Length: 178
Length: 267
Image (cartoon, rainbow over all chains, first blue to last red; front, top):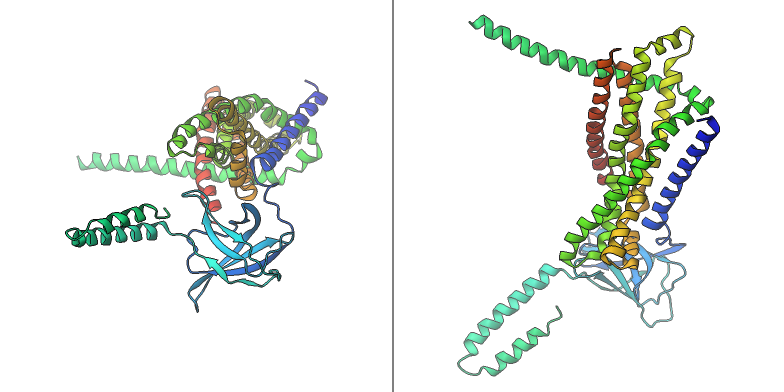
C-alpha cells in the first residue's frame, strides 16, 4: 500500500474518532442541555436538606432554571444554607417559595421554586425566606408507626364503649399523604 | 540431613530472589526505554509519515475488531441491564446504565485489552524479529538510532490510536445498546436519550474515560515495545515475549484502571 492511501485511511480513522468523541459529548453527555448563561445567586436556609447535592437542578414548574452552587452549614442557626444560581432570563418575586423535592420515589433531590405574588424580584445576594425542608422517609415512617401504635392503644381502651370513632380514625389514616 | 534441608530452602529463596531481581531489572529497563522513546521522539514528528504508517497498522487495522466487539458489548449490556432494571420498574434508566458502563469503564478497558491482543502482539513480534535478524544492529551500524526510528513512532502511534479507538468503542457500544433497548425491547426512545443526557457528565465521565484510554495507550504500547526490544533473539524468545506482552498488558491495564478510577472518584 502506498503512502497516500495510508494517509487517507489514517485521516478517516482520526475523523471517525473525532466524530465519536463529539457524538459522546453531544448525544450521550449533557454538553448541550446543561447550558446556563448568565446567572444571579440567591440563598435559602433549610432545617434539613436531605440528600441535596451541589449542582442539583433548580426547577420551576418542572423547567430547569438554575443549579445549586454551594451548600454550607450555619453554626449560629444550625441550618443548612444553600446558594443557588438562577438563569438571568428568569425573574422571581421576592416571596418565592423554595422547596426541596425528590424526583420520583427514590430519585435525586432538587429545589423547586414556586413564584409568589410580590412585584419586587429577587436579586443577587437576596435570601429566600419561605422554605420547605426535604421529606425524610425514615422520619415519616417512624411517625406513621408511632401514630398507628397510639391509635391501636386508643382503640383498645375505647373498644368496650364505642367502636365508631376508632373506625373513622382508621379511614383518616388511610388518607395520609403517603 | 539438616544440610539437605538448608540447601533446599536456600535454593528456593535464591530462586525467588533472582526472579524478583529480574522483574525489577526489567521494570527499570522498561522505564529507561520509555524515557529514551520520549527523548528521541522528535524524529517521529519531524518525519511524520513514519508515525502515520504505524497509526495505520495499530489503529486503522484494529477498527474492525473494536467496532464489532463494541457493538456486541453494548447489546449485551442493554439486554442484561433491562433484565434487572425492569424488576424495579425503571427500565428507562437502561440508557444511563449502558452509557456510563461504556464511557467510564468498558470503553477504555476492553479497547486496551483488545489493543494488547491485536496491535501489541504485532509490535512485539515485529521488533523481536527485527532484533533476531539483526536489523536493529544494522541500523546502529548505519548511525540510525533504532529507538528514534523504530520505537518512538510506534509509541506515539499507540498513544494516538488508543483514545480514538476507545471513543469509537463507547459510541458504537451506545448505538448497540440503543438498538437492543429501543426497537427490540421497546423502551421509550426519548426517555432512553434524555435520561442518558441527564446523568452522563461530560467532564466527570467522558473526559475521564479519555484520560484513562490515553494512560492505557502509553502502558500497552510501552509494554509491547519493551518486550520486543528485550526478547532473546531466538524463535522461542520472540514467541515467549509475545505471550508476555498480552499477559502483562492485560494485568497492567486492569490494575491501572482500579488506581485511576479511585483517583477520579475521590475528587
